[in-house]
Image 1 (cartoon, chains in turn brown, purple):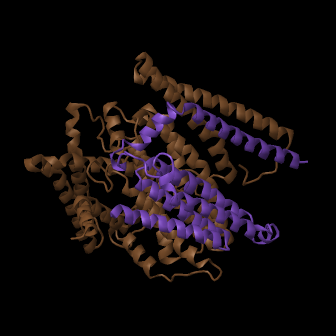
Image 2 (image 1 turned 90 degrees about the horizontal axis):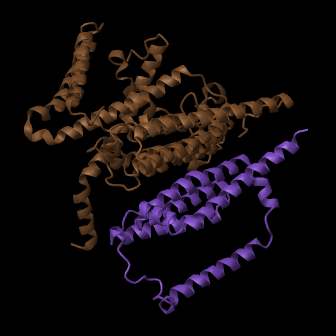
Length: 448
Length: 177
């Protein structure tokens, strides 16, 4: 056997778990994205006192699959004056960037593709930011005014909010002292508290920036329907459009995972250090069992017989999953799988909660105007993020030099951050008020 | 073996897309090939286990600077001015510079063993995969041995940034009646 084949075989032997995980991610993310869309439509319907999709499957549960089939068999239009190669390639960049970023994430202590990346969090953020190249190039290659305005808006938005988000991450990284994802989670375990409570300002800034980076309402200016048709995606149809769509939702999962890892304790359960709360580890199974019971309760109320059967099937699936979660408690040899399973549950639970907040904000807040968006990014979030990093560093210094309590220093410095930023905002408001009273400035929607 | 396959892949992509970047007529196409060159170079950094350099290259160059390049190219119509502004002797100067660089590289490669310190190969260097974590080492050396150059560079960048802001602001003020 020649050395190349040997190296390849060795590679396969040592990496087969990672390969399987990678294939699972690539195969499952489109499905998850489809169901995230369904959840979003259902939530929107609920908040607007409607029913949402109800026709395909019971309560519209098969709607994503019908949508996927529709998108696949739609005609693939390419505008005559489009730049062929770039038009063809741009959606692929967005999708590949989001999936590659997922490769470095840990969806629980055992469910990950790449192991032991020393720069884990930076890798995820850097690679997922490449997705914007797809948006910009796609908008340019479409050769359409709506597309290019959408693309330019998205570029400006990316550059402004990536700065704020990147600086906000530093506050959590200072607390963790490392870039490796498992070590960040371990640091939150060791400090007995999630970093959201130690650096609330950092979490807030990261959350706002991540909404802006994923182009979602209230910052969805690159694809504002009422102004730009569909922004950079205007000329795209069929499968290419769905690639953009998948990339966007995959990106949402990525930023939610980054926020969960950095600020929400990763795969740790609530109060991970308190022993008498160990019964919380049973919560995943109880939760799934409750969902199953509820499905059975609803099954009798379905109008059509086939829908009743479907509800029973969903209930059985929930019970099956609950059995998987409960099995390690009963069968001793399977005990080793318990942290992995529970970790994955808590991680996905937190990611879902984060995405739920995204959707909630989308249906609650009206869209920003572009100059307001730029103003918020440059005049408020970036200075706030810099002050926050400074004060978190100060708190850590006080803790290590004078042995003060970490909680005490954190509360003091958070108050300090908020006080300084309020002062700066007041100063800025006064100055702009003075300037606008001196001379009425014509509105420039691309200012900043 | 696997290492050299990876190296030649990235190096080939880098050289090929660098050549394509220079020869494309469309500015956006050039920018795209510049991005592939930068990504391939980042891949070589990663292969050398310089993971911090790899991700810095991607975040700064591809995610930041190239995005701004494309932004400017899209905002400014380059088709008309590119013909007016073209420097006439450009081709001659380009050939001269390229020839000089090529000569330099060839001479260094041919005479490497005569260089002081045993040429291009560093004696007794540790294999890349046994080195300590790159980002920590970089941070340590930046904040201990090279603290003064680091601070000077950061002040220089700050001055440049403030200068750019001041220039942009002044221009607007004089524009207004």
